[in-house]
Amino acid sequence: MFNVSAFQENTRADLVVDNGTNLSRVQRKTGRLRNGSVLFAPCSTYGHHPNPKVRRRTYDGEIEEFAVFRPELGAVYLVPIADVRVTSQALLRVTPPLNGQWKRQRNYEIARIDVF
Image (cartoon, rainbow, N blue to C red; front, side, top):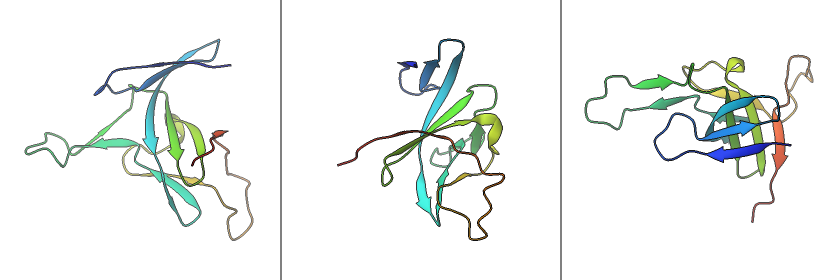
């Protein structure tokens, strides 16, 4: 059983999850479905600011996990930050690979939500 607490806007972590043993800081993301995978940005971009000091800012040291939601699938994934490259985009395979190998694939799905 998990207890979840939400933070206010413009913080690096959106949620804190208590699994009964540990607390973990979580950043929420919406994924895009592309070619059998859910893609999400594991960093913040600041290109829309007039003079950004950095264009991309990672969440290293500021969160432990990403909670990724994909509306078409109604799926929620909980992905440890240690499992993704935090400088570009992250990819979660959701359909079988063409070669049928699932050996190194991990399942991060934690919930399905009925989407209207």
